[in-house]
Image 1: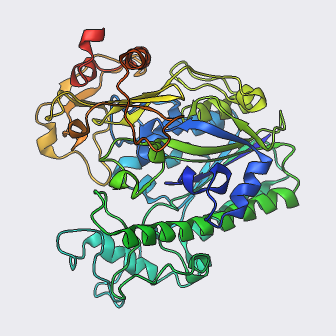
Image 2 (image 1 turned 90 degrees about the vertical axis):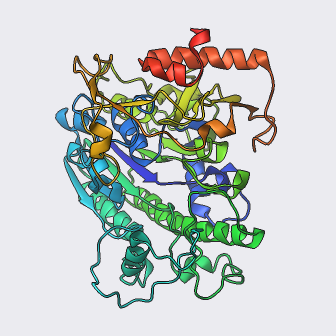
Image 3 (image 1 turned 60 degrees about the vertical axis):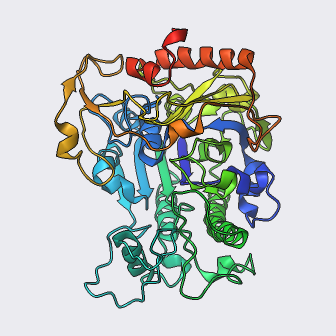
Length: 499
């Protein structure tokens, strides 16, 4: 048995032809849909990048206890469990967050790994005095001529990528396909090919922009409109459409390399004994709800309802849709089940073999969110977004034995009031540090929201329906308790009255 996961970052479901898009050039995603079960109700869990990957390892939510985080000492890691059971596991990725402080415990869980440099502002190529012209920063900062370190570094890196085959995505897929060719006759391996694309910045070559011929018509020559900031939309409609074309061009590049993996599976006749999962960690706002990017706004459908494609050779289901509610936490459970490895007791996800085969449900409802933001719940039809009741967004703590953020340790000012918490159900008897968390911006100002996403997919008409809200609160409370949620989260969200 073999398994391949292709994981994209910030892959927007609503930009893909299998999910109804009629203007992006992505024929291989359509081809993929014809070879797999296509899931319509796949939702994120813990957001964003590394919290989602912690779920891929552990199969349980982490956003109620922790924000961006390394794997903790008490975490059970799916690739590690497979490796310990005799399955060779390999990670090939250009996702630079694995090599930063807040993600540095993930890659060594695999039997082997390969890291491809150069994405986003990865501090890769060195130029003390940059030989390339650094365009003005068009990321929406107050000073349009400001150039920050990440923006500067990204343009230095781009100078080393004149051709598509020089880009990290291309090199990542090439390394993954090399592993497939070298090992296609072997048994018992899992390969995770993971690219940062189509995450911003939306940098790619002209041949992909040519699918969208008007992409530069409105762009001033000294501005690089391919990296939106995490903020409300203040630009005009032409800018918004231009940015969507930039995203689409990078999506078309992703489609090319997806197609090459599908070609290789055909060439080597691997479909009979190889599971294929194509997924993402979350979507991306391209002007919808008048927002760019993610994190600050509520987790609307464009962010939270993600694409998922699964080929399982045991059932052979292809070209069919699945309506069951599934999440990232189900993917490690699915892989362990596929290789016959027992799931640990802390894993909350469920294997999807029968869901792929016949759409058997695995849950009534699902939680999702970001630490300190809205706590969200969906039953597949309704989405309930519970906001903090106070503008101060408190009380709020992080529980960890690994006090690291994305690119640095916790600041010493964050560590002055550490307490020791009692063990949680999943910490294997260990007490964790309880550290006051930084308040998340804006969540209170949006208020609590309820949507019927079957009738109102764009979430333009919030509902006022006390009966539905009560049902969603019951789902939320049940799932929060099952996650051994810290008691202050109920207080932060004003849920004590329902306990």
